[in-house]
Image 1 (spheres, helix red, strand yellow):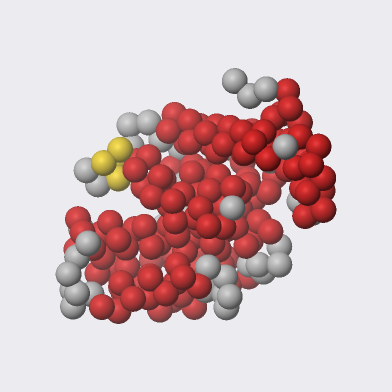
Image 2 (cartoon, rainbow, N blue to C red):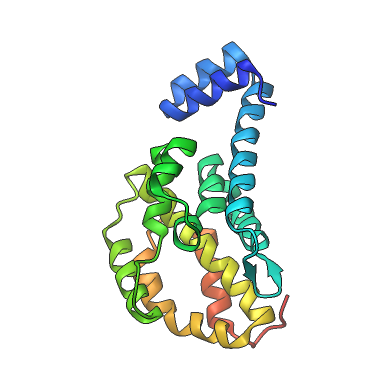
Length: 211
């Protein structure tokens, strides 16, 4: 269980994001317990997502395989990105509400997840058109928007990698959607290595061996 000091540090990270406050907390409580609090927060997100996505499949795999893949890609961008990665499909594919996410994970995470959620109704083409229009309005200066854009790039990369290996028709669909997706979601200087790998996999098709 999370101890009292870890709960205190979790509260600090939840309400304050400035670097000087984080530095103070590290000095007062210590890096080991900071890590404990962050790990507990991520573990909570994982457990929450697995419970809510229970019974859902990602191709031949349990759905959490995809969530874990997106989380790994989001790891270089910090704990909030990893938490959002675990929760990115939860409003879209489960009965979880926005208010539940606010209560359990804070407004920042809930807002980022809401930015990533497909509109309700319509076919894939119309949903993606509306979603991409939303992405074009996101300003990465806003932290929730920045997290959403990062996690969306990680999500698409995970989907492209998986479909290239296991579902060629879906991979071809991602290739056809890529110009519009990139136009809407790419921001200069934001998760450039993710975009580099994604662009490469989209462009090379079957010209290089699958991995």
